[in-house]
Length: 81
Image (cartoon, helix red, strand yellow):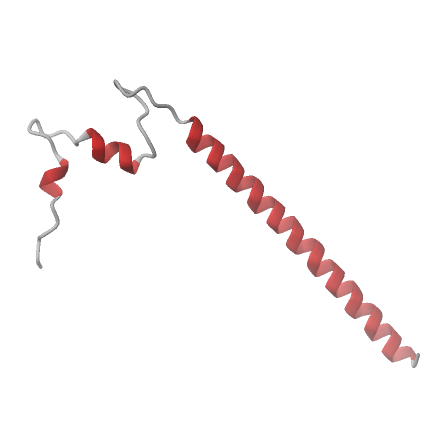
């Protein structure tokens, strides 16, 4: 196996991960001198959940309309109208 990925560059001299790497992979700093928080992550998660629920409701409503229309079409065809 070729081991060319620079994992060693992710670590500082004392063996801890570089803050630039941990900040990137965790959507921003949660502690330390940069003073970040998780508000943005929670907002994006809530928006994603709301969008997913809205899409699911929209899909159910659309399918219900299509099935109702098809049932009416089949009833009309079977009654000879």
